[in-house]
Amino acid sequence: MSDQRARGRGTPRGAEGSWRARGRGKGRGSTSPSSSWHTNGPIQRDASVSANPTASASVSFRRRMDLMASVSRSSGLEKDGDDLKNYKTQEEYKHFIKEKVESIFKDHARSVSESEDDKKRRIDSQENVLILFRKLREGVSSSNRNDAFALETYETSLYLSALFDSPKQTISIIPHLLPVRHEDPPKFTSHSPSGYSVMISLLHHLVAQYPSQGTYFQQRNSLPSGLLHTYSEGMEWLASLTKSLRFRNYAKFAMLTQRSHVMALLQRFSDNDKAAYNSQTGLKSDSDLAIKAILNLLDSLRKKVSETAWTIIRATYRELSCDSTPNETGAWLSRSLCLENLLDSRFSVDAERWLVDKIPIGHVRRKEGVEGKWVVCKVR
Image (tube, rainbow, N blue to C red; front, side, top):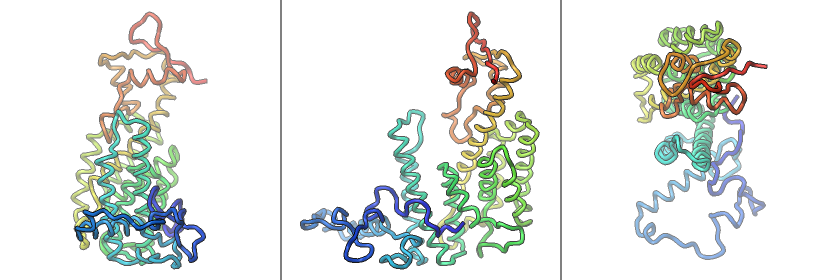
């Protein structure tokens, strides 16, 4: 699926001069009187900005970036609609987006005490950044750019889409990075996609299609032998992971996806990917961002596996011994149900807390008169 096809809104929420603001003006693309571009009276300018040419230029630049037209929506008819086909503009726009990404991690980081309003603001900010990256990809694709900058644009977009839980964006990016068929030629002139990108693409299929592994194997079989050889250790790990799921060996799966095991594997990826980050453009895909994206995908997969494992446990056990004090049953449950959060340990839960959350939906109940004993309600 081409990134040039219109998907969703072409302009971030709240951006001035969005396509929704364009009314029946005298010419195509004119804005309504309520737009910030027009006022009924004289425009009031900030005195400090007027007196400072540098500040004024900065405001002008950011306004231009905020109002950057989408290639797919302009169809060549809107003023400045082809700006994102220009290489220099693409690089400026990517730097502009990078600042917004940094702002999200600084001002809208997820926390244990996050309120519903804070969560909404965080998700809105994340979605807006993904929209901006989609516009940039459209420009890169329209200009037929296939150098290091293009590779970095697609890879960073992929990492953020996986980290921000946007599978629709992820699946639209993968075909631009990895071949659809084994015999397809390389898509980029600079480097092959990083091992992180390969891992994220394959994990995406496992998460999106769980428990089916059909699309995972389709993607894996389309990878060129060079990539498979370069990242052979990662491919072997994925082979063991998928096998454990097919055979319902959830103890093996839990071991393979422990944070310490995964981090050791990803650390070795960086040696193979060094060349991919020595970009001629001076911009780079962020390996730390890629690692967070992989951990987030694994957390999503572990949650799905946890529900499957819990169904088996409910069908097998009548009672469980688990309380707030450390014990073998609690440790076993934590491992079997993958209760450790890989991305952020603050979101890990202990076995007793997990069981408490299952009481309202009728999965378990405390055994009367016995501390730390749980009666397992059978699957009906």
